[in-house]
Length: 407
Image (cartoon, rainbow, N blue to C red; front, side, top):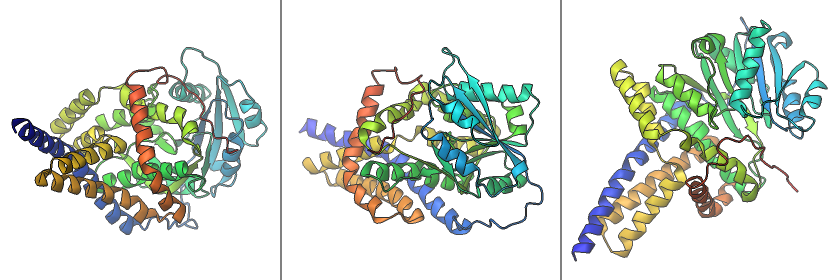
């Protein structure tokens, strides 16, 4: 009897702990719905006048991307922006394929080749390329970072220019999935990325917080890079630089009308390398130490943005949160603990609201809804990734190209 009572108390404590991040996600989700209605996301005034177009440098770090880079370069050639308003730079980083040759064969693309077997990775490649541009006195108003396997919407630079003219200095585009109906895994990836890359930044900006940086579709003014030079070299260089900006009181503005599409792996097997690299982000820094640092800075400056960033930083991955919520719900049912059962249902309901927000805002095809049937397997897959990471760091420092073979 005593053991059962202790178990009940344990369940209540666990559910109370889970309630914090679930409540945070619900608040952010509600704010994103309100913000979307105000912004009318998707309606772009592409014919608006460009009174003072900024000059952009588009930076593309590429490691053995010969098979996909051409698609991105073609989409950049179709941008609805003055031809003299942007220049494309490709840094072929430690490439052993024809990436550099392909880029050189495309009009208006400048290619830099870099070989460094010690300082490997996207962060080092970006830092090196920025230094090369400075040495050559190639000065621009703003710098856009794109992944080589992407496609940009024609209005991308026009929308970014609008935000820069409005005073924003660090911007993040909507980074979404190009092939979201190709397989259940790409559909589930679309849901996951929509939650992380659309629902959360849209809601956080609406609440007065900062968007995160996702690595693809980032845009920085020259003034910002002078104040905070790019010194992010971890496997999660985008998140590292985001934390640097927020800690220093810089706000990242989310721009949902600027869209960049990425091709995702179509099977769980192909997702392995990408997932291990992405989830390694949480293992590069001790979250609690970073959170305490941000909290202290926020309290001293009376800055809500930095305090809100603590809540985002300490929110567990959705797969872990979902698994824990179902675990306490089932445990409450097995021992028939009505208060725990009620709290468990509320937690699951909160997560369902969070996930449903992505479907409500962007209204995907039926294929995406059918893919939800595969969600339990996807959650178990993600948990396995966490399990691997807790025992091995061998993927944390590598820049390994993700396989996207469709046949």
